[in-house]
Image 1 (cartoon, rainbow, N blue to C red):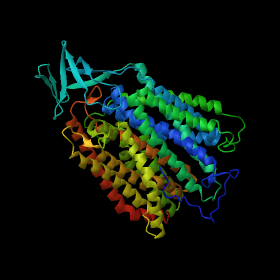
Image 2: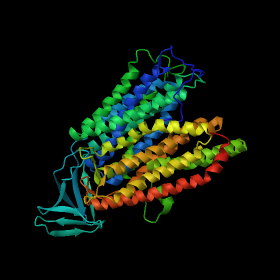
Image 3: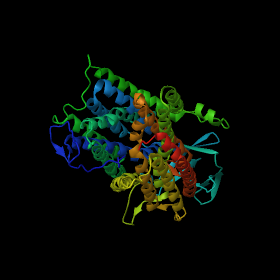
Image 4: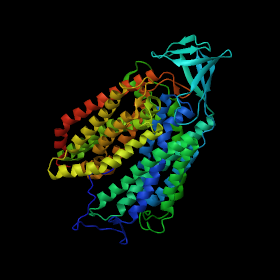
Length: 601
């Protein structure tokens, strides 16, 4: 996420109260270069792993789309939640620098752990409570499908080809080409047999990454902030440069990690992510004294470092338990309604939803009681925007789940007929467009501001919501031009990411700044927590939305590409229209929200 509102130019009258020894890097404290590179390599590891995760779960472990989407959403939700704890521990005890190094070690261990996935899960089918073996031909355990895979149901020694039909039923075709049996939709279940040890090992890897990210992510940004004295106008531009490292890291990793996973094996893709994380750690660990005095622990009578490290290790099995509970929780009973649905949520879902649903009205009630009318209205504006923020990130974060699976199943991945990219590599479009569009958006906002017509924060939020919806509608339009293989051209998916990247640049840079400006001073920290909680909830709900787009698979492959295309098009149309309508509603409400903000820009 890039702060496009920052002005990268520093005029001669700009105060530049640096805490450094005088060395500069592009007019900024030279330590920024090391922190920029540290963040770049950390994001290289994280986004490289993320580009592979959904494909790894569906193709190697043969989890269903529903299980994959739920686990992916739960993982990304915890990734955004743990920094609240990691930041607090660093502020009070560890110091930012120690927290970053410890987090980097845990994350690299997590990526290395993901390298050990064991053998590919063995598919089977359950029909009328009887289990049948499923044989696979021409299957390669890699992220990208070859299109030549075939699945056979083995019954009484006979191999029956599994062919999905447009109505969701399945034909079992004999060697003579005749249909031996037709299985009605819902009368069968396809699953995979996988060693419990390797499933637990995979979940342990995700848990290590989750806990490690909590220590790393908030505290590397904190160190950047300490490079500048209060009032130094270079601070915003410094963070703009720093956050560009996120996009550069993700851009390259989302190309290279899937490439290695396809050409060498899953372990190589995750291994490259781990190496990137180790490089990030080494830049802080072996800084040559360049970061001495930055991110140091606060003064305290005795060190609590060991207790915190032990507590972090204990938190790993707790995260593993949450993931396991997420995978095994039964669905809500039919007709139970929204209350029944919430009560049937996995433990992680209950914690996120009920904490968010209780905290928003509770904080507003407290604000009304202790604050002035102006303060209450500003808090109300912040809370309204936080709720709309949940909607945006819920839809935007389909990138790593449903959109990646769509890329694998229903996208022609040829680039001008010269070469093909993999489904995991399509995620690089977002980072590429962010890097390309950020300078343009920065100039555009600054130009509009000079003319006094820059959109207000609520209008930018509304533009973002309508933009993310427009991206999905653009892709749905493209499905009308799918070929006889029920695949759309790659450029329709690239167009979606282009629109989504522009939408992200309307909402991402202003969110945190908005919270600090609108919150009552006594609870700014709490409101920052609610902001990150809203993003965590959005990640979880994104998994639920991706579950709605689930497609029936056998051994990691869909049984009918037309059904797959129609399913994705239907879900993307629904959420696209919903997002545009919600964005339009916010646009209508924006004058009222602007009034509540009392001049905050």
